[in-house]
Length: 358
Image 1 (tube, rainbow, N blue to C red):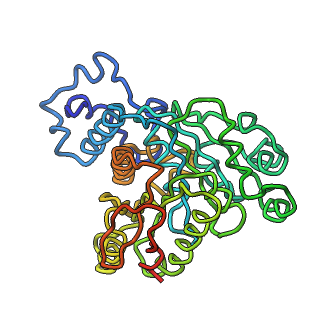
Image 2 (tube, rainbow, N blue to C red):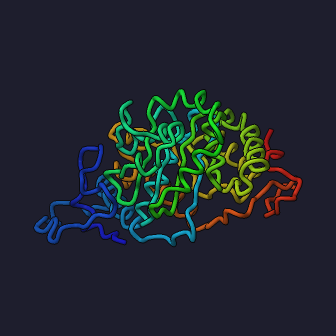
Image 3 (tube, rainbow, N blue to C red):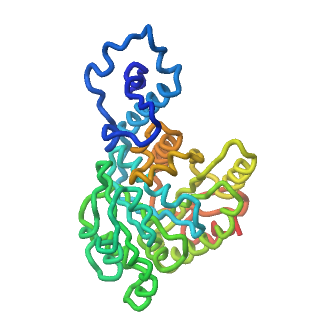
């Protein structure tokens, strides 16, 4: 990890905005002699200036991403779901995926939202003529025919969504094995992958059910506002129903607090309530409100390549590291215990996580 201010300082960009190509694709190499000849008598130490500190954070973040993480023994298929809109599902999907890829993993993002926002954030074309996940679900096209590499991040791939996906809910109704079409497509994908992250639409329809049947783990982003808790019980009940009837491996493995504003008492109260109900499933890392996170998609980038030294980028890097190191076993379900603690149960345990929040 590089943290020397003499390395970071000359790389500072005085104009806030997207980073240059040197930042795209992960850890950067500082050219030999970069910044030589700069008089230290005329410039203050870089650590003492906001621009210098930002540049130093960027180098440290990219160095941290390049350290690598232990790879899972088998592909972890993770469903990012919450039927409430605006809680950070797509943002969480693409930035966790980019973080894992920068750590050396091979990651596939499956965009199941007809709006195609995950495809936009990853810089993937998703106009009507592009082969997309719609063709996989409805036309039984191989997943390998629609997957495209993400230009800025090595090891990151995307199966894009197009507007055609908006009609897939109706078209799937009459198809055979409509709930498991995505599962079969992922199982037939021959390229090696460490993670598959599925970005779900803000609903509990057939597209989300396809994702829940295909995955083993559910990742729930929760905005740090009380409205975000409404309807969460219904999502958990749906997870339990899919687990009982279609996918015994499915369980909620990760809950991530997003849009956390440490200046407000409300955010702290919501975070405390979520941690009380869900215990160890909640990541210690929370994602702060960040302008950089919101700006990045307009440049077709994740925050990791747009501004790797920002608080949002550092938070997603840490969340991805924490999620990867947990190494949650897909065959074990973690369920809510009415006494307020979380323990590991077998499938016969009568208690359900959905009892925790109504």
